[in-house]
Length: 184
Image 1 (cartoon, rainbow, N blue to C red):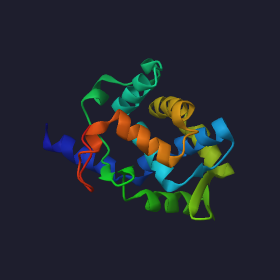
Image 2 (cartoon, helix red, strand yellow):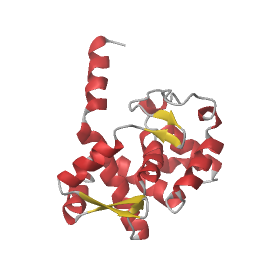
Image 3 (cartoon, rainbow, N blue to C red):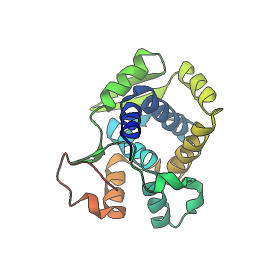
Image 4 (tube, rainbow, N blue to C red):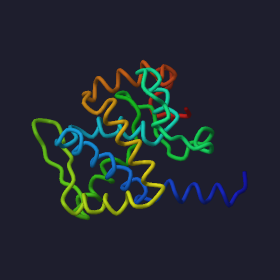
């Protein structure tokens, strides 16, 4: 692997825009599928885990006896991990979610509100318009299709049920130490 490729991967991983676009697609599917906001940052993180790691989405679909073709995994995605997440006590996590949600809200693309101790996240009209523009781009069409499949398959599950399902489907995560990078 060349140093130039490593630098490019690092730049992509640190580009908030790529992560924000992915989260917009997930939030859009939540609204399309359930007409509701996503209940909690942890639930969003677990759904995003499946979107960030398409090989894990494929394994989850297999575990649920669903067609894996809907994951549309490209050959290079089978051997690369482009987006870092860590093992956290409630499942896969990235410490930047609060930052990304703050950026979505600051840009007028999403709103967040509190009910009890749970943060709810939903798209604004501007966020929906942005999603419509994103899904016109081929690379985002695939992510949108995956987001749709994720939401159809597990979107109605609570964050706790998603955590349990992830640990059941990916038992190797359980043996990892908290804060350790997930390398699936």
